[in-house]
Structures are given as C-alpha cells and as structure tokens.
Image 1 (cartoon, rainbow, N blue to C red):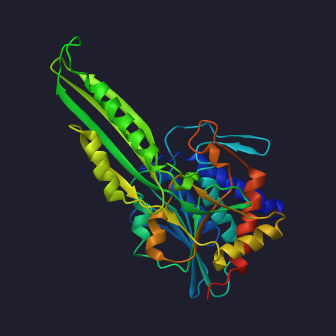
Image 2 (cartoon, one colour):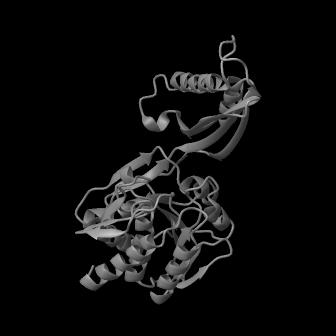
Image 3 (cartoon, rainbow, N blue to C red):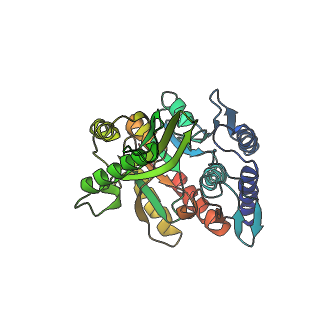
Length: 353
C-alpha cells in the first residue's frame, strides 16, 4: 500500500470509530460509511433495515464482505498514540469493516466479480437484525465475516449461544424462618447449572467442545410483601449439542422459577479446504507469514448466515480479540494496513467458479 492509501484507510477507520454506534444507534456511522463508499466508487446505500451496503464491479461471482457497524456500549475517547488508534469498535469490529472497504477500493472493479461490502446493524445484540435481513436478499458465492483474528489468522468456527432469563418471585418470609430467600434459591439454580455443565464437559479438553455457562446479571428486590430475584445466564454451545434437551434440563433445574429463552444460535464450523481458505493461505504467505486457523468460543454473524448460504465462508479482520468489549480497546494501524494488503490479494486472486 502507498502512503496515500494508508492515510485514506486511516481516515476511514478513524471516522467510523468517531461515530459512536452501539446496537440500535448505528445511523450516523451508517450514513458516514455509505458516503465514504460512494466517494470511493461503490454503488452504496442504506438499506431499509439500516445496513450500509456497497457494491463494486459486476460479474457472475459475488463475494460478500459482511462486517458489523454496531458496537457494545461504553464510549472510549478516540485518540491516536503512535501507530495505535484507541476507541470503541477499533477491534470489534470497525477495524475489519474498514479493512473490507479499503481493500475492495484498492483492488478496484475486478473482471467477473461483484464485491459487496455490508456493514450490518445489531450484530452485538441477540437479534443480528442486519444479517438476517440480508439472508434472502443476497446469494453470495463466498463470504468473509468481519471479526478480529489478527492479520495472519483466519477464524473458521464459532460456538453457539443461548440466553436464559430466570425470575423467581414469592411472598416475603421472616429471615429467621425455615425457608431460604429467593436470592438463595436463585443462587442454587446457578449452582445447579454449573454442576450440569461440569458433568457435560467431563472428558472434553477442547474449549470449543465444552458447554460454557456464564452469569451475566443478577438482582434481587423487595417491596415489603414480595421479593423477586432475577438472573441472566449465557451459554456458549458446542457443535452437536441438542438445544432442546438443554432447555429441558434447565427448566427442571429452575424449579418454581420462571424462564425465558432467547438468542439461540447453533455452533458453526466452516471448512479449511475451500478455495476461499486457500486464497487466504496464499495471501498471508505472500505478506510474509503463515496462516493460523482458529475457532472461537463466541458467536458471530457466521452462525446466522453460514447454515443458510452454504457457501465458502470464514472470518477475518485485524486486531487483538482479547481487547473486544474492554475499556482498553485499540488497534495497531500497522496491522490494519497488513490486513488490507492480505484481503486485496484475496479479492484479486480468488476464483470460485
């Protein structure tokens, strides 16, 4: 990449990060990205669901670069320190989205290929509204999901997800009485969930194969007559897990507690032997490193679109995923530039048909 291309790419990413866009509040960032893509020669628009979508080139092969433009909540002051850019979304996942736009623009229109960049809304919510809207509106031949993995790493699998809201409410009893409080019973439910997961995971050494529960929120309140305890538990689901059987077991553990299940996504594992994956191997090698394939314990829009589109798919993007969602979120712009160079090579050299 030339000095001017680096500067334009840095301005694109900085502008995106400066527009704080937690889930359901993405409009300003979407409008900015649509204008940037238009200026770079894309046919770009904000679609009716609020996604930023731009296309470049025309041909029988459609390569979709599907990123997300929303972030988790928590504003981080945008600042640059040397090659480091700080701000919410620099890693998860505006860095990857800006990589998509910059790489496609540098590659330019390619013979026989239509490159589509989508900045989807609400990926950080359980809805994945933006990606779901695209499911029956696009039929890509290959998909790259925008998520941080590092410039020389490629992600081919994500665990599934299930969220459970637990509520237990009853009349208040005397603290000296024989019955425990609702808080104690709610904690007992959580302990039962942990024990069930530990038994399920017996003999499973790989994190990707383990059932992983996490206590997301807990609260208890009383009004003098009744007391209520609430918990939200998140499960990371391994491949092959029977979600229906899991829900049945959780219901039994809950006793008199009321449950609401939401956000169910099955685990997804893509192939490492596709032409898309091989194109990344060659491109990363050409940029001076050897590819590392990864699976992750989180979820992404790969879980949503992979089972439907059934085409070559993987996730790629610069940044250290350990900084996802943290108050220390930042990206090394030198790594960002290398990721752009890798993806440009992939777009130019990839032959699907």
